[in-house]
Image (cartoon, rainbow, N blue to C red; front, side):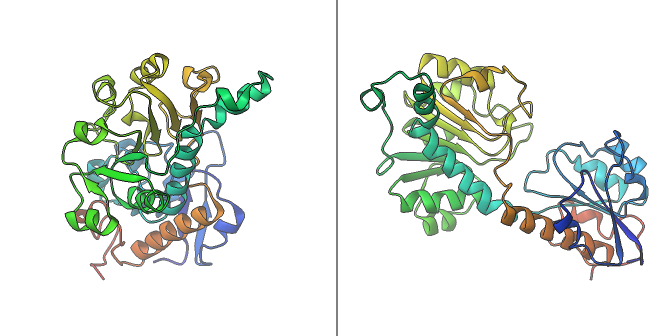
Length: 328
């Protein structure tokens, strides 16, 4: 690694995070309205979710050797373009796990207890609060997780401790993981959600999973189901969700991710009495940020030192562009 390796962020990092970078690096970020300002000098990039990293970006960033997505999802990185450019693309799958799982659980508790509706009734001074309130008791409730990866597994552990019966659909995880967590396995998505009182989504977004939760899937759910999404907004067909909310098929929804992000003022999801929306902040805790940043920085520094990053998404590219190093 050269004495002045440049690590570029797509937004200004918090000072305490930027200070974690070693002295032999220069930390930069856009200083103008151009979101790619300065990326042409970057040896490594730590990326959020707002920029699409495709061929046009890699053609501009001719020095770039490693791009690390600060988070789990990497749907804003066009992997085949990164590979063609010789850029190692990585993510930080362990970084957001704890904070995001906690946020998913917070949304589950909030929507099933009707906290938004209850506060709104209080604001309107409607009175008769307890008799008109109809919340779901979670001890003994049925929860289905769509996805049992890192975040889904942690949600399952905490939910089970609260007495919730957990089922999951995940064709990619082993039977051993289901057994270790005490989670009932369903091999059919429609069957998995058919008896659930709560459905929580923890799946990646791809061309195959876009609008995975559509009118057909929702139609096969229990009447009065609650839906929570902390994965990607594109996994839910918003029109289908709104129709189901208006009909009462879905009793409530908790969404940390939407399409688009952020939702504009006046959007039907923001205006709906039974929907609680947060602006993609599930992993935004102090501990979560530190963990994500540290993991991202470690992978950038490893790659620039000629060491294969631990979470490389396109391993076939290694050792990649502008490198004379092999796999260390």
